[in-house]
Image (cartoon, rainbow, N blue to C red; front, side, top):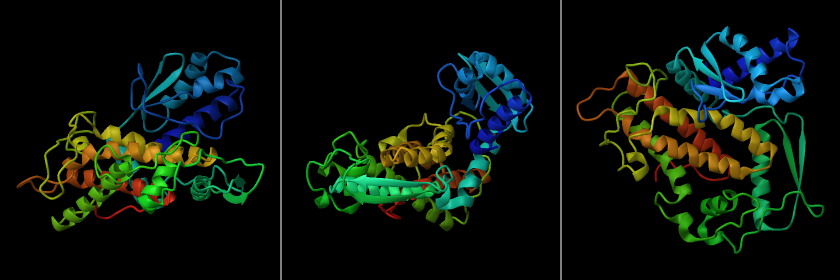
Length: 353
């Protein structure tokens, strides 16, 4: 069961509770599932009970207890625990299936992964001032709105409804990609920094980390091909997928690891969560006209995948296994998300860096 499928399962439980007369609420259009927070447990959690409590006229924990048996009876769910004021914590039957299912979904949809119909049929009219950053933001918003089935138009003049803080100087000397990032990565109310920091190829530069992660993934795919194997979704190890860190051996087939890649305490789950969250981020970026949300999300994906990459290829005399093919598939899924997101921001995703 993928996170998207789990979200639909939770939504179906809400509909059933409404149909059975146990809840008197309007069924929401969608339900968000995320990684459990502090005090939570299981694989995923949702605050849908807290959202429905006030319109239902019942305490959140009561709403959660109404939904719990309907979720436990659903295919793919092992257990559901109510914690805190009413969070539903969900444990899936087989987490290896969760990884493989998500990877297959990303592979099947490619650059269209995360695209939806949240704004289907809607026309978003953008009115911007004659100012460079406003033009760049509006251009990105047009592309992001299109991923959710909407259409955005751009006009100039008052009343303005999209006015990010202008850049203090012309970013053109940074080049196209760094200029785009410098204008789009900060929140609209923050003044962008137009400095050479955006060109430095170091871990301190978030644009470098995002583009480097994509280039590393492409390098892994090329080297795997030379070793005679290709990506195939499946369990990441011979044991069931859990929270233990994966091996972090250095590879002779790819460039040296960055400091972020040397973090051996990261687990595949650290990557699974942002990949599963990508559709929600795209919807939020389109709805709120906020390409900065997408830019920051790409940094999150890059920071999650970089520590994972040294475990993808076999080391020394080790032979490629099913686990290596599955790890490569997960890495390539992250590369797909990074490339698609950079494209929406108008930035190149390099094959080499």
